[in-house]
Image (cartoon, rainbow, N blue to C red; front, side, top):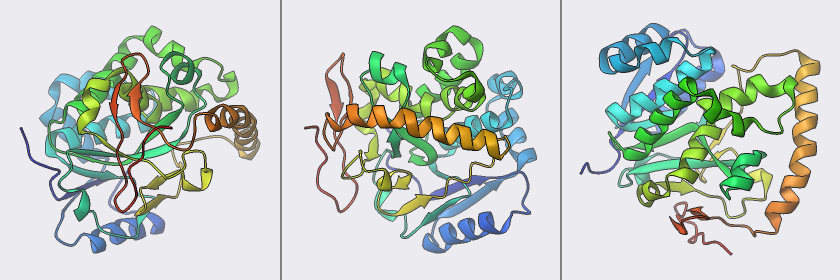
Length: 285
């Protein structure tokens, strides 16, 4: 078995000529982790990496209908192959990653979910993020995520339950989230509880407090630039209003479950609570 997570940071972007915010995020991450190897992949290098290291997934990679899906798929492949930490270019940290090196796999809590399938069928009212995570090479949880990305592309019927209740106007965005993004990663958590004993999820103290969402534990924050999202101001405004309305009902339901969560599947009863460094153990109420 491999040891912990190697001291390596992986990031990717269209080119090496990054916008100012992305440059600042990359410098922030490197300056806080001066002893870490830093790897950056532009579009051409991403495609070359997939062809060289995962030729069996060449057709899968090339057939994703949306560009962001290729980035999502690449980040899982890169960390699975190399080991280390992946970070989006809009994440800013307040401390180094050294404390996570003994871990085998680390993911951040994202937010409470609106997804009916996760809530009703899998008993999971929360999601984990894919904007920042770390793992030892060949970690089985990442292997399962990769397999699910492939399955989502090849089997539309498998994806369909995850799209229930989403207005047609916003289905493109949620299709991406549920086929390569946080929705898919979270579904993997719920359906593969046997893999979760080696996965540390950085839960906040109160999962129902939206002020603690989109944070890498107590060390970083995701700025939620969402540059892959498209649409005019009116479309984005309507999307925000719908999500606010839908979350009001979801939040009432989640508050009844308490402040904390286990990484557990309700049908198997297996799972383990994990804690963010310098915080108390997070156990289900």
